[in-house]
Length: 168
Image (cartoon, rainbow, N blue to C red):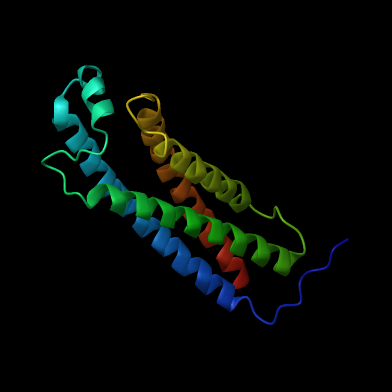
């Protein structure tokens, strides 16, 4: 049987987790705003997506007139940030739980956390595939992000209950 890690204090770990979770939620909200803006500008660009496929294939880098050129790069950058933050949270959670208990699976937080990691990675994967050649990618990305909202709510709730166990 593996023994718990002999770490002096887990307070630094919880600070990293708290900041990472706060930044993850902030990044999610920024992604929702920029993604909504991208979606609306995409819809206003041509109305019927099917009739616009040829034009988009010929000029994929064109930015619609009503959308700033920095919006898509900001959305992609923020998406990359949330992926890194969620992976950091996964590492902190695994180290903290294993270090404190010597094993994993002491609460529903593990399942909620793994679900959020999976949804985040699936969302990023789908986002990178959005193009006129892959009409399935945008609805998948949007649907996964709605599920991610529920997942982030669940992981926040279960994480709060877990942290209460560690605090004196």
